[in-house]
Image 1 (cartoon, rainbow, N blue to C red):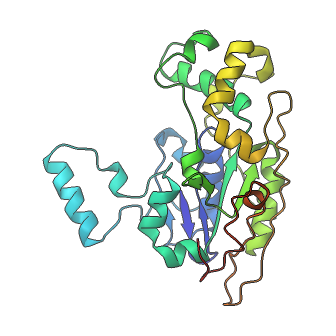
Image 2: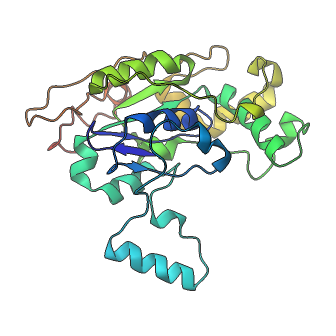
Length: 273
């Protein structure tokens, strides 16, 4: 996760969508007061452009008290602070309504059938069981990799823009232009050792194909993904910005939700959620 106050954006990092590479690159446009969360895999930190992880620990009285109590009870303190795959609902709570509504929020998403194959390759290598059949992997407890809660709240899209993984570089350039960021991003190739080339469709049979369709129904329906075509039919890479009457730069029409009859409206910094 990255929050830039000068450029007024919030990047919510989804899973297996080149999010680490995007996060490492976006650090180059951050300032000392911005929020940059640490990586789960610190070996990728040398690839980071610009500033290192900072300001990810919340310094409120409530957060400090929760952290001390968790340490005494030997509980995990991760979700007390900002973390890399933070859910949209928690990010909104921690940042507050003013920042959440007025900053431009974006994420990256990927065809779920393609993403699942990439995750299978990544996870089995990481766990030392590379070679486990794809169908067997889907039966394990860690097979589900949905990112929906990272960019959705109450089953509705909570971000202003979704970058297509399939057009990562060009879509990010559109986002930066929208934000007025003139710096050209240098995307590092993080987690490259886990990748293996190949057409994701070759790994599937009817049962595994249906497993993905059931498990990731929310994102498939929302963005128009299909097994045959990696391209989403409801994303085109364009940022549709609505002029904010209060002078903010991060107010965007929720075109996708409107198409799915989940309209919130053209939300400005003082608008309703």
